Length: 438
Image (cartoon, rainbow, N blue to C red; front, side, top):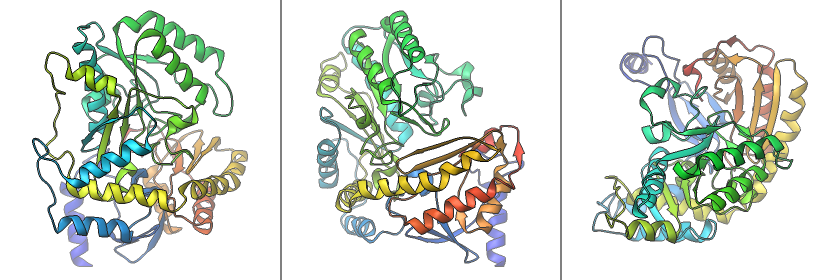
């Protein structure tokens, strides 16, 4: 116990956790082990994990098939440079991605993380137009309330006002932001959304290289859900005005929304797609950017003749091996039935909370459940409550949300929802703060 206290003291003094102040850091809870849908803390307490480690551990923890994939690859090699070399795990993973993603994504760029995947997509879009001799298309178009990552290119298309990166506005490239969609998921395209899209494309298409957005669900920017009709309209306008379409499926991909990919709700084919998070089943960092033949061939015929990007750890063999195992596992156990079951449980247990005076809105789609409160939540205080009740849920701003592993059973889901319901009667509120990030 004394050693643990010493380690935690060092942590507080020296380790900078994400979106945390070094003056007054949020408390952290040491994890001893994780298995299935449970985290075990150093003091022995077991917590039902409602977060899937920021949405990526879709199969739960310590899954024997994923562990075996890492162990098997480790006996051969863990990593080799991908410049001038290749290997079976990268090839087989790319075969699997081409096979399971929407038709047309025939080229695969394997990279390090979701943010890097977005950087790669942005660079592809700009280099595409440069290769065609069009240097006027040097801006991006997107919608407010979006989140695409923490690196500079990704930050530049995150929400510029209420987002987590608004303080960098003066040093980021200035792109074109449309209002967030008001078209509800179960409804058609709202006339206001339609008019704003048409006006923006008409006014800016000549300078826009690509439109980038998260399909159907806006994740860390606010956990908002919008109509497939909005996405279809964006696609139609991209085609009409010669603008590339980038879909950021990092959070929505691999079944989270009830479809294998968010774009499948709208039956939309993009030019470039970003993947990450659940790709490895939460085992390690890995991402991919896929594009069409047209994008890849146009770049390859351009002045440089090559795509100008190459991360040191791209196509890491361990990550490729476990990603392939994760995707095969996803297809083997009827993920659709499991996600539909989670959605039904969340509807049953979370929807009634709309009657609570502190609740502004309830949103459920696939394995996503969101309770939006009228006021911001004091994260440190409510997490203590959650842990005492035996669950791990990490709210941000005014949102209490869960994205559970797909293997979670109804009883464990019920506990998560029960604890969330109970927290509404003891919530502490504060003004919005960057430290309240999910």
